[in-house]
Length: 230
Image (cartoon, rainbow, N blue to C red):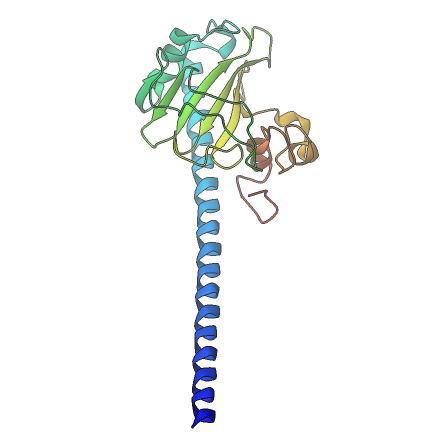
């Protein structure tokens, strides 16, 4: 009788173990599926944003001339310029150009290792679009020279919501004084190797401030593959 009870106990233990393994396997499969879907959605949303902004810039340039003629002032918020030459041509749900609002959270963004980067966009002139994307503008120069960078455009694909991380929901673009390509990923000209491997700005988990992720994804036709530091 004791032997039979021991055998029953062992069978129960094996059954519980099998169920636990099955649960872990199902959880792992679900996690992989969720992560792949998240990557695909991020890539698609970023690609559509880039396409929309490129068209918006071209439309504004057809009316107002190249960005170098838009009266940028380096180091200033340039609210009138942003409203007149950009916001007027975008589908905006909230305008935070003249005053802070809910376009961005009042927090510091992190890098891909979840370390603080000191990038806080709350006080920059910004817009929240109807598709949930928030964009903030940091004026770099008056950009009178050809191909000069006028503005850094910080793009958070899900607005103030988490994870608030460069390379996952925050990507950086530039407005450039050009008659052709006036909206580009940040520092695209450094080349594919530095975009991925630079120790300060590259799109990797060792980088202090991974600002090159938009450029890296641009070179990959907006595809997030298994090598991307997700």
